[in-house]
Image 1 (cartoon, one colour):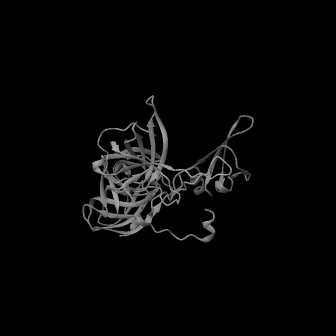
Image 2 (cartoon, one colour):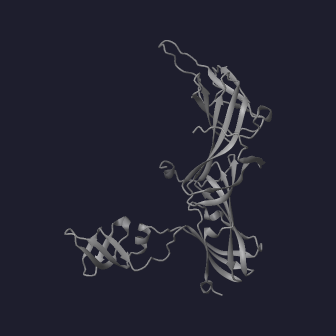
Image 3 (tube, helix red, strand yellow):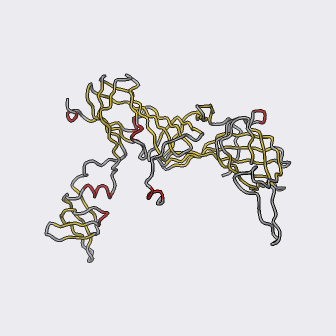
Length: 372
């Protein structure tokens, strides 16, 4: 049966049966979403609304959890021409319209005509009496919404279903614009032998979609991704929060050569939202304060310890203040630490915490030395 003879099946995100996110600290994520879809036997045209605006169409996978291997994707289209002022007027070029505008004397007039050009080239309207208005002010009224525009990004599938009825369909894809980073707060004790460490995850969602009640996992590590070669000409254009004593919100496990952190429960990550969540909380961690002089620059390869002195005829070389702690269970830690920024504080004699410095740490396994 021709595809045009089949009614379109519209799947909206409000009908989802579950969503899961695996977010990488390289500003991308894998989205897995389950929705019920009722299909007829044979060819079906399905519109799957509400995918992320920054999704990669080449990474999309569809399968039926109800009847595996019963769905075959014959054709797939990613549609992202969303309804907006410019997109509506772009699609309305050549169509009749009514222009409602206010004249200088305060009188309101309504005139009929045709839109001749797109907004990017200047709005030009030719009235029925032959007059041409360039960038006229006023309200443009169309008889109907132009076809082909969507309220949210969608996938349009031509599916061949080997089983009629309702399917629990799982759709997975990769999207850009969704990432996370780790930030740490370390508070040094008065005698500088212990430190309280709090770790926070900051998630930033700029992917163009909202994920409600999502099962969240964070992948820590530098995952290799193939980059498309750029043309040569393009290459040149181009809070501190008080530590809670509750259990960590994430459970960690080794995964391939990386570390996977799974959230206990679910969370909602809204579009254009930045969310902070507790990663770890460790108190009374043993720490060593060391004063290290490195004249060769090999101990601290990321920066030079050489600094000019106050006198014009001398060259002074400074030592570095270093805090070292073992990332081990015996030392009240023992969780692989994602790379991130560590801000260090210490209380003064009045009890007020003062900022004393910050450093960046790389991904640090268990039982490794953390050096700030």
